[in-house]
Image 1: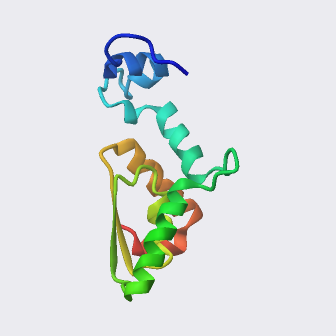
Image 2: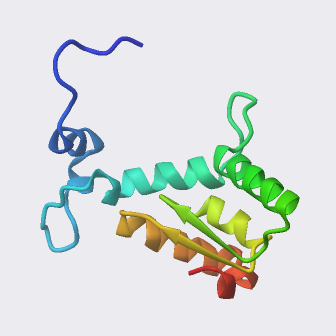
Length: 130
């Protein structure tokens, strides 16, 4: 893969690459955050909750596993913060060990997707996740 010469694409150009339906919110208003589009949310859901690819384990899960291993070594089990949680895979895996986990992300669409997955697939962990 070789990048074209010139400046990197703007957010608007990236939105256009994702397709017209992803550059509009409900009601036809344009949004400027590329992480609010359906294609990006679907891509992240697949990356976070889908199978391993190319023989590489699920990266968000692997990151959470490292955090849990280190917390166990130190006897920490209280609260965890998942900053930039995206669609919440690491948040869910952290909640299996920690008493409370706070997942934060800039994308409202990612947070909504994370909440839906949590409610539908991990209902028992819901009280532990903020």
